[in-house]
Image (cartoon, rainbow, N blue to C red; front, top):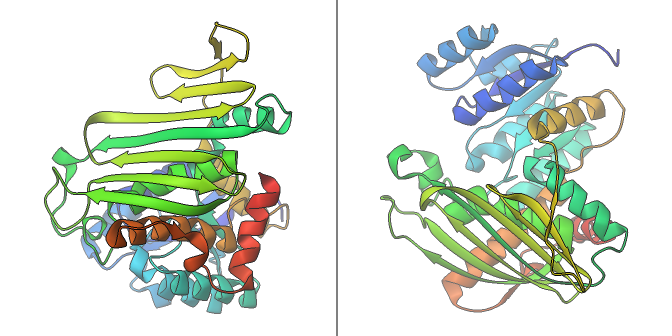
Length: 348
């Protein structure tokens, strides 16, 4: 049973559904049985590309006893509806981040999966990148000493790829724009490396992209250990760029997309390159999900942690709108969500 490919159905046929489907093919531990989206053209194209059935409805997928799990890349504002339906049908769910657009929806879908006894895994592949794993291990080993500061940047050029009407560029589909769409990857990495975030100050701007959503976002975050971190996210840059610098009392790690990972230790003037082989993070997170379904291990990012991650971004959005420091606790209500932050705290 453990070696049997996980039979999945994909719902929501956008570019990211293909990214996940390609990763499942690379893995070999999945069988894509069927797919569904409201667009018949997209549904048929996906079915042809990946050799699966084009289901006539989501209900048909949920009623198919041979389908064990749902890979869900639908718009954020229907995550709760589609995931709760999957849980009610006994289907495990791999759900791409963010978990939802509201804490209430995040809690509802998490509770539904827990009650049904199905696995819920969230797609946060950035934290699995080998350079961040390397830094985390050295933090745990005491190489960095006390963590004091971090700075991050995640920027992409979306000017030539803008799709008018796409849910990703609407306030209803993606509140906070670029902050929630891609900034969430690096707030997650910052929490993974620096520990839980307790408060946020945020600022948003719309400078280049058309539509109604911010394409520039900046956050200043207070971590529970006293460290501060900053994040800039952008959809209006000339190219793709990633940056993550972690500053400790005894060592500093510098990472960017073009130069890789480097380390500087206290007392040294030499910045040493750290070779980190590229790993297939999307295959890793999907195989982790499959393993959890088969009873071997648990998802690194589950519903509780995904909800806590969402709350950080929502605190940043509220801060930008109200012009004040916002505590993450304002967004989190209930012991389950506080427990999720406790899990992050223990890991950090």
